[in-house]
Length: 253
Image 1 (cartoon, rainbow, N blue to C red):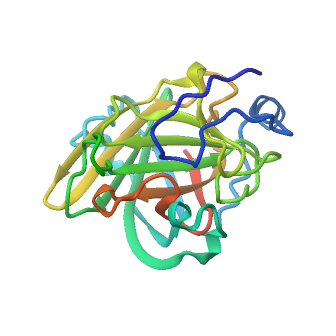
Image 2 (cartoon, one colour):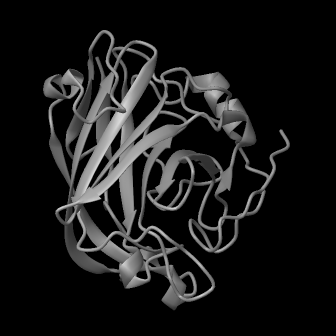
Image 3 (cartoon, one colour):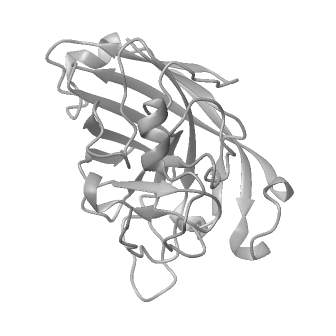
């Protein structure tokens, strides 16, 4: 399957390039349905509550009262920018908690992320400025892919929000240095707000993936999921970010 590589500065990886995956996402999705039924996370469990008629892009929507809040701690800061692609385990310990909630209405699923940030970094330009960003990562197949953007044999699907982008991006990755947006699955929308020293970001996408380049969520199934955060005021970008060093579980009611 041919994919178009689109470059977003120096953000998700050293290079945004197309690679020949040993097991392309198309084959994985067709074989395993995008990882359903096998969320192998060892961290917390995030339950996506079913709420008929939910309009989760509204942060005041009543559906959020039925979605349990879970704290996921981003506990490792890595810096591929400084190391030139060194071992992820050479990072330093951090404690960056993120409150995560999820809900769906049977057609669309909403992910809500809230975290403390002293500044709202929303612009990039020719000077050394970087925007705040957040990502969630889910393997295409069951089981736990490598945290660092999967592998050629176990690629991952990433939903990537950045404060200066018009909409979040659906991204495919098969290892470090390989992420690329998938033009056939750019169906994400969002809400973002910074206030009182914290971000609230809500990402909406269909339960059913638009193509084999987007994981399909099935009711009653579980999926491995992990997260990353970039703080623009600290010059976070690309491989300079805080991550959760382990998989969590997303359970779809």
